[in-house]
Image (cartoon, rainbow, N blue to C red; front, side, top):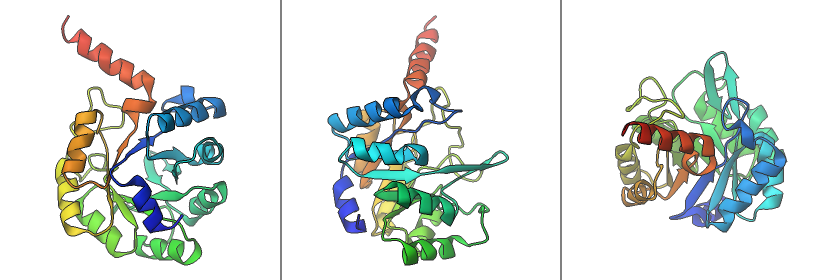
Length: 238
């Protein structure tokens, strides 16, 4: 899928992150569960789906909307999103329409700089690249070096970014609207708002802040965490 076609397909839309792994939302790791989830959000009007590598090939067969593929790699306690060309090769082979990569300033899991990594992907594959970043500077740099879109996915999840939190915190911190506003003012590439946009009103505010599209994950695709939030809120009244 061409970058311009991808950008138009997600313009003003909702991207649903259907993430499942052994340590998070594990109930939905099976092929049948993930395909049912993907088909359900498509029927609900999702513009695209973001999913990890193990699910890309069969989710592609189950839906007609674009599939953004990622692969989370851990080295000890450190995690990076699609950090090497090996994961990119696997995502392309699986049929992903676009890929999400780690665009932060943190150390990488290969011997390439981010700039060289983006250049290598561009030279080998005709696929849109979404750089997941945590600060304004990272977003500006990723766009300068060739990312086709910038996602605020990691804002609040690196030690040096604002509103430090953890995936799955109950209750979750507020979204980082400011980074969306600043990136949209300074970049021509699409800004994809992601991270704690867990209600329709927050997603709408992301678009009003300049986002091209909004990613929602846990609030749609993880019933366990949604239930925990309801229970936590009710317990505050006890």
